[in-house]
Length: 145
Image (cartoon, rainbow, N blue to C red; front, side, top):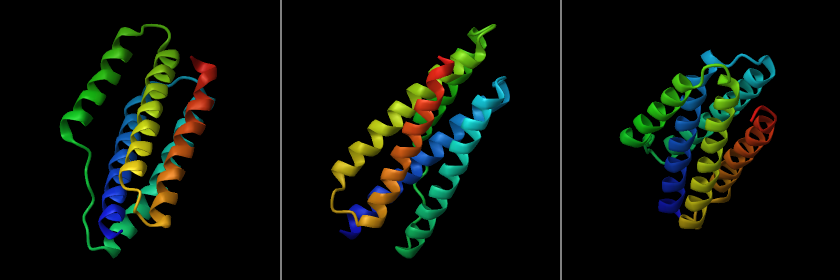
């Protein structure tokens, strides 16, 4: 149980970090104030969940698990390349990129929930809250696609 809990916490932390990084990358380009507010609200939820994961990892005397550098670099490059190609419809392009990111995040967290099914309930709650935040952002972004 301890090992599954620690591993799930590390994967949650990594996913939260990737999500916040992606939001930070696109925020300067978002024109629609409602879309910007939805992204900021999701980032704030991720920050609170990140604090929970850090506290839980500290209880186990574990360090954070940063996202794999190559994955983070590729995600950042994809976002920047797509934004550079979009001349007039940056919000539409951003909504598409962020929706894809939400889908990847949801899929990833579900995968780790299944892989580390022996994790404690508090950690599973954190993972499910990440999934909920991603689902909510994905729903809010649909109108901008």
